[in-house]
Each structure stands twice: as C-alpha cells, then as structure tokens.
Image 1 (cartoon, rainbow, N blue to C red):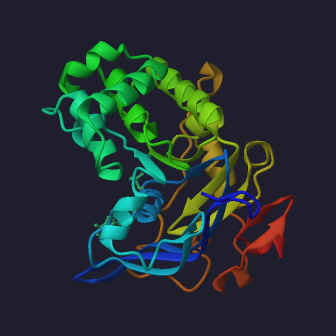
Image 2: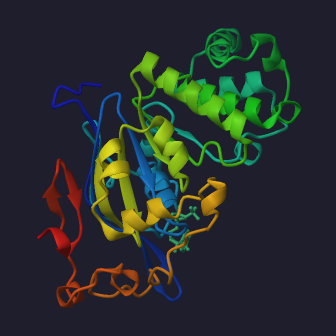
Length: 321
Ligand SMILES: Nc1ncnc2c1ncn2[C@@H]1O[C@H](COP(=O)(O)OP(=O)(O)OP(=O)(O)O)[C@@H](O)[C@H]1O
C-alpha cells in the first residue's frame, strides 16, 4: 500500500460508532479523532466500558449488523465506513490484523495450528497449497519462538503464553500494515505478559507494523506504546506521546487514572480509585462527560469542551482553553 501521504496508516475523523439497542443507541465511540503513523504504536487506555474495544473492533467492522458508523475512518487510502462485508474480508488479516485477549476462544481449539494458518492464508491467496501455507507458517512460528513441528498440534495442547504466540503469528503471517491488539496479555501471568509484549514490540520493529494496543493496564502501554490516547465515555480526552502523558498529564481524568495505578510501596499501600462512575452511553449529558467526577469543575464545564492543542498533544478540557 502507498503511504506517501505523511506515512499515515490510519485516520479517524469525528468517528462515531453507536450500537443499536431496544432502548436506543449506545454511543460507545462518540466523535473521536486519531492519527496513526507507519511503525508507530498507540496505546488506547481508559476504564472498562469507555469504548476501547468498540473502537478496535469497529476498525474491522466486527460489530453487530445494525451498528451505526458516522464520520470518517481511513486505513491507508481505504475508506472503511462504506465497505460491505465482502469488501471488509479483504481488509481483515491482510491490511489490518487482530490479536484478541483470549486465544482459547478466538483460536478454534479443535483445528490443528497448521490448518489455522492454511485457512487464514487461503482467505487472501485462494490458490495457495497446503504445503506452501505450512512453509509460511513455519517461518513465522520460528519468529515467535515456537518450533515449527508443533503446528501439527491443536491450540488446546499449548500453554496460555504459547497460544498467544500462535495468535500473534497468525495476525502477522499476511504482513498487515496495522495490528490491533485488544488486551493481548490480560489472561497471562506477569512474566509471560512481559515476554509477549517484548515479542510483539520486536516483531513490530522488524516488520515496521503499526500497532493499536488496547488495554486498561497503564503498565502494559508504558512498556510498548509511543503515543497514548486516553478514552472516557466514548471520547478521546487526551492524546500525546507516552512520556508527556506519564509525566505531564493534562486532563483531570488522565491525572486521576495515573494515580489509580496500584502502588507497591509498602508505606503507601492505599488503593486509589476515581469516585463516581461514567455517564450512561445511552443518554450522555451535553456538558463535559467527566464533569460530575472532576475535582476542577467550573461553570463552563456545563458546555461540552472542544479539543485544545497543547504541548504537542490534544486535550478535551476547558482548563486549557
Ligand atoms: N453489542 C453491544 N450492544 C450494545 N452495547 C454494547 C455492545 N457492546 C458493548 N456495548 C456497550 O458499549 C460501551 C463500550 O464498551 P466497550 O466494550 O467498547 O468498552 P471497553 O472500554 O473496551 O471496556 P472493557 O475494557 O470492559 O472491555 C459499554 O457501555 C458497553 O456496555
């Protein structure tokens, strides 16, 4: 694909993704702007239910049929929103790969690993032979640290960390431009988690792939992301390079989110949490969505803040008008 235009691989402009329900539309993604460049990793963070997974799965249109998309979403030069299911199949895997949280449910446990690769490759290269697919699988499995002979086994015969390695290999076998990793290490223990993130980062560098890393765990993004986008109630409230977010957070929500990381210092074993809860996405207020929980709330917060550019990043907060 030609990325001559600033090497931008993904661009979301005023993107909205609303679920259709009997009670009305759930505004899970509600007007987000985001730019991802070639080879870059962006971490999408925020509390449970803020719309992170909807954004990730929405890029591949893996959401229920009646889901409403508005705004613009482009992957390279492909305009995603107007595409139908048949056209999306050409994007999935080949242009954008996906790594899910739990490989046990997303990898069919009763299909041998070699066949999983064959089926994935055949989707985009219909004429490929089983032997050629095995050859390709062997090469990528070696890269993720799995002996190629093991491709004769079934996913249930692998440990959790090994299954996640198989999933990474499957996501990369077609050499996509972007990989979306949605909570890729949540089900793993801390040591295996660190190994998997290191592997993902190494492969990202060698293939020059861009990564969208979705997680509620700020430790995970600290290890791997270049940029961080903080989501709250369906919107991006702050975006910047990693160090700016960690050391000079601007949005009150980002500040509180960083404070809520469990502290391992025995002298300060107090679990911080953010009082209150986000608004229902079925019925969102016109004002700033964080206002009811915000320690810096002002009168003007009754109006929805625009996004302000500051310190190389973007902040959706009236404090920076
Ligand atoms: N199929 C669906 N129909 C209606 N609402 C949905 C559907 N899937 C998710 N939602 C709602 O959309 C909102 C965003 O959910 P989403 O799973 O994207 O958030 P998240 O930040 O990824 O959370 P988590 O970290 O818990 O996975 C939530 O309010 C959720 O209840």
